[in-house]
Length: 189
Ligand code: GLN
Image (cartoon, protein in one colour):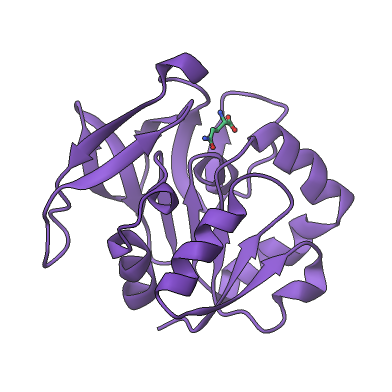
C-alpha cells in the first residue's frame, strides 16, 4: 500500500486531491519539481488543463523524472491527468506520458457548459453503492489496447481503466467527499 503520495501541483485541482488524502490520513507531497518526488511511492496527476500541464512539465523538467518514477511506482490520473498518462491524445499540443495503452479525445463530452454529474455504481468494490461522478469538459477513452482492464463504463463508454500500475479516470473522484476511489488506488496499486 502506498503511504506517501505525490500530487502533481503545477496546475489544476491538486488541492482537492490533497484534501481527499488528508481525509484518508495519507501523507502526501505537492510535486512542483523533480526532487519533490523523492519521498513518494505513488503519484496523482489531477484534473486541470492538459495543454498547460504539458507546458509546465517541460518547463520544470518533470517529463524524465515522472517517466522514471512511473517505472517503479503507481500513478493515478483524473480527467486532464488521464490525458497525461495516455498513450495517445487527439491534440498534438499535449505530450502524454505513454503510461497506459489508451487513446483519448480531449473535451469529447462537450464544453464547460456541458459539464455534468451522474451517479454510477462501482462494481469492482466490495461496496459498489452509487458514486457521484463529476465530468468537467471530460476526455473520452476512444480505444483501449492490450493490458488495459476497463473498470467502469458509462453510456457504453469506458470511463475508468487500469493496467498493472496506472489508474485512469475520465471524471473527478476528488470533487466528492467519497474516498472510495482514492482508497481503491491506495489498496490495489
Ligand atoms: N478539458 C481538459 C483538458 O483537455 C480536462 C478537463 C478537466 O480536467 N476537468 O485537459
